[in-house]
Length: 377
Ligand SMILES: CC(C)(COP(=O)(O)OP(=O)(O)OC[C@H]1O[C@@H](n2cnc3c(N)ncnc32)[C@H](O)[C@@H]1OP(=O)(O)O)[C@@H](O)C(=O)NCCC(=O)NCCS
Image (cartoon, rainbow, N blue to C red; front, side):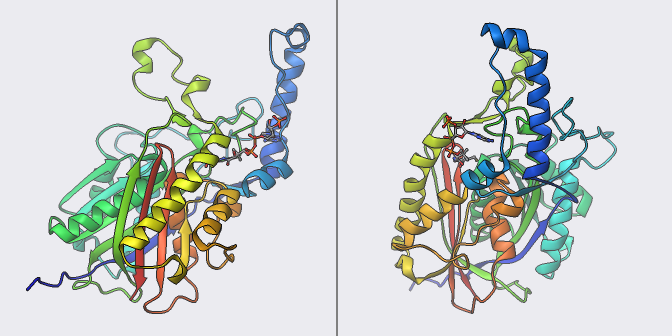
């Protein structure tokens, strides 16, 4: 007789917002001032055709094309200065807590409290996001140290799917018995990778941190927990979303902060290719679990573009999804890389009852798609 495996659960979750935010109007006004200055300064070259004029941005376009109205930013200073066009994040001494570890700790404390856990109850920390501010020591080990957690920690980078892929690793670790309680944190500090001088992409990203506790149902003390019924990861190489920033720039003499080093994408292709992939990925995962798409009460989808979410939800349900079924947080948060689906999960669990099913799914750069099917306990 096969032994029944104890369920693995999400027992705590936390969301931390930076104190600053930037509306589309503020963003566009700064960008347009920069573009006008640039065009004035280069009027002669633009006239001769040797320099391209900077096109102006528009708040209405941004909202219509992406659903974004606002974004939180870790630091606002500098980002809206037409002479600078990038945030100023003050350097810290090695003896101080790093910026990203601070963001991570802020979200982690909330998740621990929701799980009714102390730091001592955790034995593994994964920091998973689209960039870490340094290669080593791992931000996860710094967080582990700051919170007083024993065991081990490591960082993992899977761009937009970092958070879901790391939840899958946590699930597998608890299942295999290599960890008892895992703290998974995504401190997405995306504003430094944004090309604030590029009209086509300057509006896309925002900063945030989310954290989740994964453990066995046996040890769970939380008032609200979700059994992980299954997880599925998929990757398919694509150059349509890319960031070339990296330490090799030093050796090839290129500008480490050149335009090609920022987030760059072919947004239209991403849209076309990723939407069907995500819908098929989720549908086949649910099918394998013996669940029909219509049985899922809540879809916490990746938050990159509202039109992508509407299309994917429609493919999944065969009809438009309501705002309650497939919540959108893009308007307030913008694209927060891997954190988006978990922000939606943190903010929109209202009305769910014991036994209700939900899907957390990320899709984006790589390409990468990560999904978890969960059931409220
Ligand atoms: C980026 C994105 C919002 C752009 O929307 P879009 O409708 O595809 O817009 P396009 O880039 O085709 O641009 C449409 C027009 O608006 C213009 N435009 C672009 N940015 C603009 C801005 N900020 N203000 C005003 N106009 C703008 C374009 O130049 C283009 O003009 P043209 O028709 O004269 O050439 C959209 O493609 C997208 O979100 N794609 C997926 C993104 C994604 O998931 N990324 C993953 C990152 S992790």
